[in-house]
Image (tube, rainbow, N blue to C red; front, side):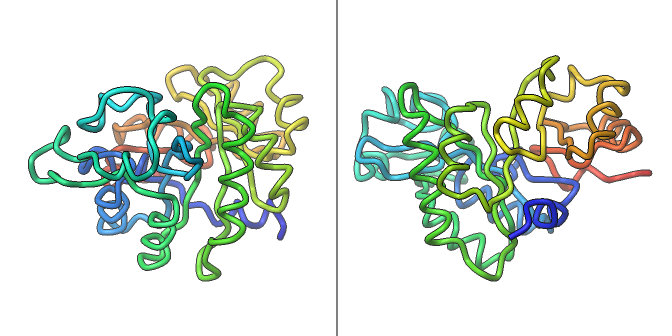
Length: 249
């Protein structure tokens, strides 16, 4: 599997945590909403339960996006599955559950949607998260979809995942592009960089792109900003409202 050719298949607009402007983030409802909107790629976050099952969840703690309290890493999968992960967003999604990576993959396969899988490890679980998720993707990823991309802010998680699955495309997440960005990508064997769009300048974008690196920006929710980034040559954007974004060149 050639990482470069796999990455070329990623769409320009990527649904952020599914389509989290319309449905509770990192749930099957959110992934399905992105598919309903015609999205071909989504991004979601994965971390481990106390019994080492990969689940879709962003925060370290449960309170913001579920009716639970405490750290995700301290709850078993069974305990996490008992929580309501939708009512916080709206009553329409009452009863929506925390999703396993297996369930997410099954839904992606049915809907024909690819994914950037963010390793969102809990503290102290960086290496294990990378290993477990990469192994899971190798074992369960459907053949009808393009290869998933592993991305993370954690270089430890990304390195661990790359060791298990070096054939998968991979990208480093940063908030602001650091001066040594190229060395960090080379060390990790990554060919893409994801950054916050607010900190990106045209000059820095063109510097990165000129090296052959794929550059994507998060989280872009206004068409005007999307158009600006497209004019700079940015390869992709993540959006909570992916249907509102269009590529204009």
